[in-house]
Image (cartoon, rainbow, N blue to C red):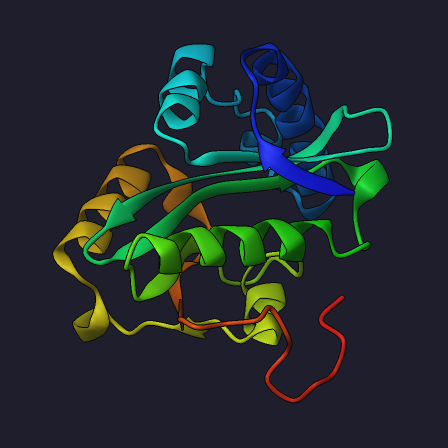
Length: 181
């Protein structure tokens, strides 16, 4: 698996990855999440042009996962990380996060942050195993509060959500050395 910047021709494939990655939410009764449309091509292009859209590509250089991020209050906020189910449980998501962490450090940012579903096994529990910690309400920065308000406006609060953070440097290893996946 190779991590690289997204190319313009990758963007429709990223939408396909997002749709496939959303399908497992249906098994949890989260049909609204499973049916949610992926980011629009113009939104993905903005991340790509900003240098904050990376893909994990297979041996044929076809994306099987992607991550988009933006700086928020001194951290790199992971807006979305999606792995196609056929590439899941192979460390692909972690590799994308490690790549984003390296980029964040090069940009002088102090942490990675993200928002996610608190009770979905491949969401908050997964990130916690990687070393991310849940933020309490007083720990939220103004930018994270804005993001949470936007998510609530989109109806994402129908299940508990949480903001999480991992300080840099971070290697992607689980804090106790146990495998995260």
